[in-house]
Length: 333
Ligand SMILES: *[C@@H]1O[C@H](CO)[C@@H](O)[C@H](O)[C@H]1NC(C)=O
Ligand SMILES: *[C@@H]1O[C@H](CO)[C@@H](O)[C@H](O)[C@H]1NC(C)=O
Ligand SMILES: *[C@@H]1O[C@H](CO)[C@@H](O)[C@H](O)[C@H]1NC(C)=O
Image (cartoon, rainbow, N blue to C red):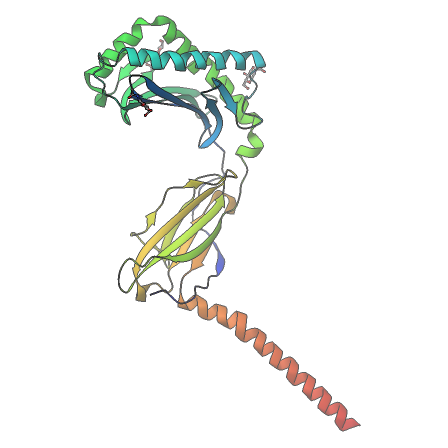
């Protein structure tokens, strides 16, 4: 059974204690996903990210980086960019070869996937920290701490073995450390500056309510859609008065093609209890003015009053005035 036509009303209310001003992303990281299907087939995926904004991709065919923003290179010179791209090209090819050569020693069985992430982050003041982590099939495997390979607890003896192998390759270790502790922080500062306008922009969300497929007899699935906001952090709750309702299900925050985000939050309620519930949206672009959307009858009554009865009343009064004037005019004649 579908609910009555849904009428919504966005009401701006003074917000609660929403967070301080937005500052933009503070982390740069490169992601690597290497998939090994069998002994003769493997594929790399590479990408570069500022927080949750992708700014670089990797073209495997051409063996080159794709710069997705005009400012993705920060203040790296063309020579530096060429050098880095070549380094990653050689690394990705070498990585696949080394892993394929060591499959039996590592006791790996096809198919498997290796993920890596490396980058640096701004901290308080002008400090930066760098990080590198590797995972096997989604489980932590090794990390680099202060330049030292550290096997993850979940990585078992395989990870220890990997770290002892890694320490034998001093040359590779030196290159990685230079990239992590020198190139990365310098690049991070410059790219945050170069992309400032886009990274620190504020785009207000739009919100609306709908009903999903009924979860059961006499139950309603209320859906609160929040669309087109930037940056990504957002706070969306179903509320009764000032009370947050605990049973709400929040989906993943999904990307739109224009770089903004979309989120839906659903609530399964008894049909009789939906009236008066509200979806409340808090986002940095809204300042303290939360968006509050009310569900159900009380709202539809208000809207009907405002949208139908009020104009009808005005029309009636105008008509009455017109008749009265016409009547008095004729009487004078
Ligand atoms: C290896 O995997 C690829 C991709 O799944 C497949 O197309 C190919 O036929 C496989 N080769 C062998 C020898 O199994
Ligand atoms: C990191 O390594 C440097 C020298 O290699 C050392 O001076 C420093 O204390 C180490 N820091 C931590 C947190 O282990
Ligand atoms: C690039 O920016 C970083 C950080 O702001 C700075 O330290 C470095 O000197 C700059 N490099 C060039 C070539 O301008």
